[in-house]
Amino acid sequence: MSTFPWLKGHGTENDFVILPDPDGSVHGALDASVVRFLCDRHAGLGADGVLRVIQGDKQSYVEDGGDWFMDYRNADGSIAEMCGNGIRVFVKYLAEAGLIDGKPVRIGTRAGVKEVAQNDDGTLTADMGEPKLPDAAGIVVDANGHQWPAVHVDMGNPHAVAFVDDLNEPGTLCDQPTWSPADAFPHGVNVEFVVRRGPRDVQMRVHERGAGETRSCGTGTCAVTVAAARQARDERPVTYRVGVPGGEVSVTWRADNHLELTGPAVLHARGEFDRAWLPGI
Ligand SMILES: N[C@@H](CCC[C@H](N)C(=O)O)C(=O)O
Image (cartoon, rainbow, N blue to C red; front, top):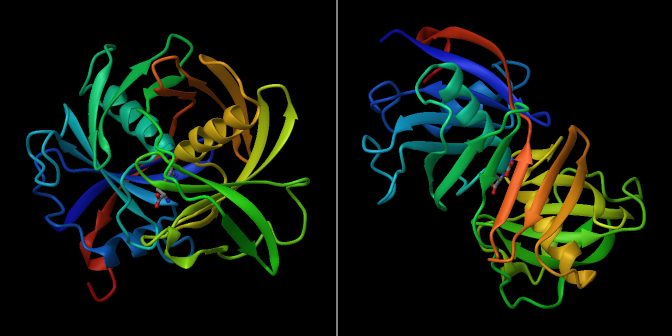
Protein backbone atom coordinates (compact mmCIF):
# COMPACT_ATOMS: atom_id res chain seq x y z
CA MET A 1 0.00 0.00 0.00
CA SER A 2 1.41 3.40 -0.91
CA THR A 3 -0.53 5.18 1.82
CA PHE A 4 -1.53 4.29 5.35
CA PRO A 5 -4.15 5.77 7.71
CA TRP A 6 -3.25 7.59 10.91
CA LEU A 7 -5.06 9.38 13.72
CA LYS A 8 -3.89 11.68 16.50
CA GLY A 9 -5.17 11.50 20.05
CA HIS A 10 -4.15 12.46 23.56
CA GLY A 11 -4.80 11.66 27.20
CA THR A 12 -4.18 14.71 29.42
CA GLU A 13 -2.07 16.03 26.52
CA ASN A 14 0.25 13.02 26.39
CA ASP A 15 -0.15 12.70 22.63
CA PHE A 16 0.04 9.78 20.25
CA VAL A 17 -0.02 8.88 16.58
CA ILE A 18 -2.44 5.96 16.20
CA LEU A 19 -1.65 3.48 13.42
CA PRO A 20 -4.55 1.13 12.63
CA ASP A 21 -3.07 -2.19 11.49
CA PRO A 22 -5.78 -4.77 12.31
CA ASP A 23 -4.12 -7.83 10.79
CA GLY A 24 -0.52 -6.62 11.15
CA SER A 25 -0.02 -6.34 7.40
CA VAL A 26 0.10 -2.53 7.06
CA HIS A 27 3.32 -1.86 8.94
CA GLY A 28 5.13 -5.20 9.13
CA ALA A 29 7.82 -4.93 11.80
CA LEU A 30 7.32 -1.13 12.13
CA ASP A 31 10.74 0.39 11.72
CA ALA A 32 12.07 2.63 14.53
CA SER A 33 13.02 5.29 11.95
CA VAL A 34 9.38 5.47 10.77
CA VAL A 35 8.27 5.97 14.39
CA ARG A 36 10.87 8.72 14.90
CA PHE A 37 9.75 10.46 11.73
CA LEU A 38 6.02 10.30 12.55
CA CYS A 39 6.66 11.63 16.09
CA ASP A 40 8.90 14.48 14.92
CA ARG A 41 7.12 17.74 15.86
CA HIS A 42 8.73 19.73 13.05
CA ALA A 43 9.07 17.34 10.12
CA GLY A 44 6.46 14.69 10.94
CA LEU A 45 3.04 14.52 12.61
CA GLY A 46 4.42 15.13 16.10
CA ALA A 47 3.72 12.98 19.17
CA ASP A 48 5.16 11.52 22.38
CA GLY A 49 4.66 8.01 21.03
CA VAL A 50 2.96 5.66 18.58
CA LEU A 51 0.04 3.34 19.30
CA ARG A 52 -0.18 0.63 16.69
CA VAL A 53 -3.54 -1.15 16.80
CA ILE A 54 -3.43 -4.89 15.99
CA GLN A 55 -5.95 -7.65 16.66
CA GLY A 56 -4.85 -9.69 19.64
CA ASP A 57 -4.60 -12.95 17.68
CA LYS A 58 -2.78 -11.33 14.72
CA GLN A 59 0.21 -10.00 16.68
CA SER A 60 3.38 -12.00 17.28
CA TYR A 61 4.92 -10.10 20.20
CA VAL A 62 3.45 -11.65 23.37
CA GLU A 63 1.66 -14.84 24.37
CA ASP A 64 -1.71 -13.28 25.24
CA GLY A 65 -2.46 -10.32 22.98
CA GLY A 66 -5.89 -9.77 24.56
CA ASP A 67 -8.78 -8.81 22.29
CA TRP A 68 -6.56 -6.12 20.77
CA PHE A 69 -2.80 -5.56 21.14
CA MET A 70 -1.26 -2.14 21.81
CA ASP A 71 2.14 -2.06 20.11
CA TYR A 72 3.59 0.97 21.89
CA ARG A 73 6.66 2.88 20.71
CA ASN A 74 8.31 5.94 22.25
CA ALA A 75 9.03 9.01 20.11
CA ASP A 76 12.69 8.01 19.80
CA GLY A 77 11.66 4.68 18.25
CA SER A 78 12.30 2.59 21.36
CA ILE A 79 9.81 0.01 22.58
CA ALA A 80 8.04 0.45 25.93
CA GLU A 81 6.14 -2.18 27.85
CA MET A 82 3.11 -0.14 28.75
CA CYS A 83 1.46 3.29 28.43
CA GLY A 84 -1.34 4.33 30.80
CA ASN A 85 -2.54 7.35 28.83
CA GLY A 86 -2.05 5.56 25.53
CA ILE A 87 -4.24 2.62 26.51
CA ARG A 88 -7.22 4.93 27.13
CA VAL A 89 -6.69 6.66 23.77
CA PHE A 90 -6.31 3.22 22.17
CA VAL A 91 -9.71 2.09 23.52
CA LYS A 92 -11.30 5.42 22.59
CA TYR A 93 -10.15 4.78 19.00
CA LEU A 94 -11.53 1.20 19.03
CA ALA A 95 -14.89 2.50 20.29
CA GLU A 96 -15.14 5.38 17.81
CA ALA A 97 -14.15 3.09 14.94
CA GLY A 98 -16.98 0.73 15.92
CA LEU A 99 -14.52 -2.10 16.60
CA ILE A 100 -15.76 -2.69 20.17
CA ASP A 101 -19.04 -2.20 22.03
CA GLY A 102 -19.44 -0.57 25.44
CA LYS A 103 -18.25 -3.60 27.42
CA PRO A 104 -14.82 -3.72 29.10
CA VAL A 105 -12.13 -4.77 26.64
CA ARG A 106 -8.92 -6.78 27.19
CA ILE A 107 -5.90 -5.01 25.73
CA GLY A 108 -2.66 -6.93 25.32
CA THR A 109 0.55 -5.06 26.08
CA ARG A 110 4.17 -6.06 26.59
CA ALA A 111 3.41 -5.76 30.33
CA GLY A 112 0.48 -8.20 30.16
CA VAL A 113 -3.23 -7.90 29.46
CA LYS A 114 -5.04 -4.85 30.92
CA GLU A 115 -8.81 -4.49 31.12
CA VAL A 116 -10.20 -1.08 30.16
CA ALA A 117 -13.76 0.14 30.86
CA GLN A 118 -15.61 3.05 29.23
CA ASN A 119 -17.42 5.19 31.79
CA ASP A 120 -20.73 7.02 31.29
CA ASP A 121 -19.03 10.42 31.72
CA GLY A 122 -16.70 9.73 28.76
CA THR A 123 -13.64 8.92 30.86
CA LEU A 124 -11.98 5.50 30.71
CA THR A 125 -10.68 3.35 33.54
CA ALA A 126 -7.76 0.98 33.07
CA ASP A 127 -6.86 -1.79 35.49
CA MET A 128 -3.12 -1.21 35.49
CA GLY A 129 -2.27 -4.32 37.50
CA GLU A 130 -0.01 -4.57 40.53
CA PRO A 131 3.02 -2.34 41.14
CA LYS A 132 6.39 -3.85 41.92
CA LEU A 133 8.70 -2.17 44.36
CA PRO A 134 12.12 -3.57 43.55
CA ASP A 135 14.41 -3.47 46.53
CA ALA A 136 16.55 -0.67 45.19
CA ALA A 137 17.05 1.60 48.17
CA GLY A 138 19.33 4.58 47.82
CA ILE A 139 18.39 5.70 44.30
CA VAL A 140 19.31 9.30 43.61
CA VAL A 141 18.01 11.31 40.66
CA ASP A 142 20.27 14.01 39.33
CA ALA A 143 19.02 16.84 37.11
CA ASN A 144 21.10 19.83 36.09
CA GLY A 145 23.41 19.34 39.07
CA HIS A 146 20.59 19.02 41.65
CA GLN A 147 19.95 15.74 43.41
CA TRP A 148 16.90 14.10 45.00
CA PRO A 149 16.33 10.69 46.60
CA ALA A 150 13.88 8.64 44.53
CA VAL A 151 11.63 5.60 44.91
CA HIS A 152 11.74 2.85 42.28
CA VAL A 153 8.21 1.76 41.28
CA ASP A 154 7.71 -0.67 38.41
CA MET A 155 4.35 -0.48 36.61
CA GLY A 156 5.43 -2.89 33.90
CA ASN A 157 7.72 -0.05 32.87
CA PRO A 158 10.26 1.55 35.21
CA HIS A 159 9.71 4.74 37.23
CA ALA A 160 11.81 6.78 39.67
CA VAL A 161 9.63 9.06 41.83
CA ALA A 162 11.28 12.05 43.53
CA PHE A 163 9.43 14.29 46.01
CA VAL A 164 10.48 17.93 45.65
CA ASP A 165 9.53 21.18 47.42
CA ASP A 166 8.67 23.07 44.26
CA LEU A 167 8.02 21.73 40.74
CA ASN A 168 9.80 24.75 39.32
CA GLU A 169 12.89 24.37 41.44
CA PRO A 170 16.06 24.54 39.38
CA GLY A 171 16.91 21.22 37.86
CA THR A 172 13.46 19.70 37.50
CA LEU A 173 13.22 21.09 33.98
CA CYS A 174 16.01 19.54 31.99
CA ASP A 175 16.62 17.39 28.95
CA GLN A 176 17.17 14.08 30.70
CA PRO A 177 17.75 13.39 34.38
CA THR A 178 20.42 10.86 35.28
CA TRP A 179 20.39 8.47 38.24
CA SER A 180 22.64 6.54 40.52
CA PRO A 181 23.52 3.80 41.01
CA ALA A 182 23.81 3.72 37.24
CA ASP A 183 22.83 0.05 37.03
CA ALA A 184 19.52 0.57 38.91
CA PHE A 185 17.73 1.02 35.58
CA PRO A 186 19.60 -0.89 32.88
CA HIS A 187 16.91 -0.09 30.29
CA GLY A 188 16.40 3.55 31.29
CA VAL A 189 13.68 5.03 33.47
CA ASN A 190 10.79 7.49 33.51
CA VAL A 191 11.39 10.16 36.18
CA GLU A 192 8.54 11.85 38.08
CA PHE A 193 8.99 14.98 40.23
CA VAL A 194 6.13 15.37 42.73
CA VAL A 195 4.75 17.86 45.26
CA ARG A 196 1.92 17.24 47.72
CA ARG A 197 -0.97 19.69 47.47
CA GLY A 198 -3.12 18.20 50.23
CA PRO A 199 -4.31 14.85 51.51
CA ARG A 200 -4.32 12.36 48.61
CA ASP A 201 -3.69 15.20 46.19
CA VAL A 202 -0.40 15.56 44.32
CA GLN A 203 1.00 17.44 41.33
CA MET A 204 3.80 16.09 39.16
CA ARG A 205 6.06 16.66 36.19
CA VAL A 206 7.56 13.85 34.20
CA HIS A 207 10.56 13.13 32.02
CA GLU A 208 9.66 10.12 29.95
CA ARG A 209 12.17 7.57 28.79
CA GLY A 210 12.34 7.89 25.02
CA ALA A 211 10.32 11.11 24.78
CA GLY A 212 11.72 13.81 27.14
CA GLU A 213 9.49 16.00 29.29
CA THR A 214 5.84 15.34 28.41
CA ARG A 215 2.53 16.82 29.60
CA SER A 216 1.51 13.62 31.37
CA CYS A 217 2.35 9.95 31.94
CA GLY A 218 -0.36 7.50 33.05
CA THR A 219 1.94 4.79 34.38
CA GLY A 220 3.82 7.65 36.06
CA THR A 221 0.67 8.81 37.88
CA CYS A 222 0.25 5.26 39.20
CA ALA A 223 3.90 5.10 40.33
CA VAL A 224 3.49 8.47 42.05
CA THR A 225 0.32 7.28 43.82
CA VAL A 226 2.14 4.22 45.14
CA ALA A 227 5.08 6.28 46.38
CA ALA A 228 2.82 8.95 47.95
CA ALA A 229 0.44 6.46 49.60
CA ARG A 230 3.33 4.48 51.07
CA GLN A 231 4.95 7.65 52.36
CA ALA A 232 1.66 8.77 53.98
CA ARG A 233 0.95 5.23 55.27
CA ASP A 234 -2.52 5.36 53.65
CA GLU A 235 -4.73 2.34 54.06
CA ARG A 236 -5.97 0.72 50.86
CA PRO A 237 -8.20 1.24 49.01
CA VAL A 238 -7.06 4.81 48.58
CA THR A 239 -7.72 7.27 45.75
CA TYR A 240 -5.34 10.05 44.72
CA ARG A 241 -6.00 13.02 42.52
CA VAL A 242 -2.89 13.44 40.39
CA GLY A 243 -2.38 16.73 38.58
CA VAL A 244 -0.10 16.81 35.55
CA PRO A 245 0.78 19.75 33.27
CA GLY A 246 -1.85 18.54 30.76
CA GLY A 247 -4.77 17.99 33.16
CA GLU A 248 -5.56 15.57 35.93
CA VAL A 249 -6.39 11.91 36.51
CA SER A 250 -7.63 9.82 39.39
CA VAL A 251 -5.72 6.78 40.62
CA THR A 252 -7.12 4.21 43.05
CA TRP A 253 -4.80 1.76 44.75
CA ARG A 254 -7.22 -1.06 45.51
CA ALA A 255 -7.23 -3.42 48.47
CA ASP A 256 -6.22 -6.27 46.11
CA ASN A 257 -3.06 -4.26 45.22
CA HIS A 258 -4.21 -3.37 41.67
CA LEU A 259 -4.04 0.24 40.48
CA GLU A 260 -6.98 1.72 38.60
CA LEU A 261 -6.31 4.75 36.41
CA THR A 262 -9.26 6.93 35.35
CA GLY A 263 -8.89 9.84 32.96
CA PRO A 264 -9.93 11.38 29.65
CA ALA A 265 -9.05 10.33 26.11
CA VAL A 266 -9.46 12.53 23.04
CA LEU A 267 -9.16 11.89 19.30
CA HIS A 268 -8.48 15.11 17.44
CA ALA A 269 -7.13 14.50 13.93
CA ARG A 270 -6.95 11.87 11.22
CA GLY A 271 -5.43 11.51 7.77
CA GLU A 272 -3.70 9.39 5.19
CA PHE A 273 0.09 9.29 5.02
CA ASP A 274 1.92 8.76 1.72
CA ARG A 275 4.86 6.38 2.12
CA ALA A 276 6.78 8.46 -0.42
CA TRP A 277 6.95 11.18 2.27
CA LEU A 278 8.99 8.97 4.60
CA PRO A 279 12.47 10.36 3.93
CA GLY A 280 15.03 7.76 3.01
CA ILE A 281 12.99 4.91 4.51
N1 LIG B 1 3.29 8.03 28.45
C1 LIG B 1 3.15 6.71 28.91
C2 LIG B 1 4.40 5.92 29.13
C3 LIG B 1 5.08 5.64 27.80
C4 LIG B 1 6.26 4.73 27.92
C5 LIG B 1 7.40 5.34 28.68
N2 LIG B 1 7.97 6.49 28.04
C6 LIG B 1 8.48 4.26 28.87
O1 LIG B 1 9.45 4.22 28.09
O2 LIG B 1 8.34 3.44 29.79
C7 LIG B 1 2.10 6.55 29.98
O3 LIG B 1 1.11 7.29 29.89
O4 LIG B 1 2.19 5.66 30.82
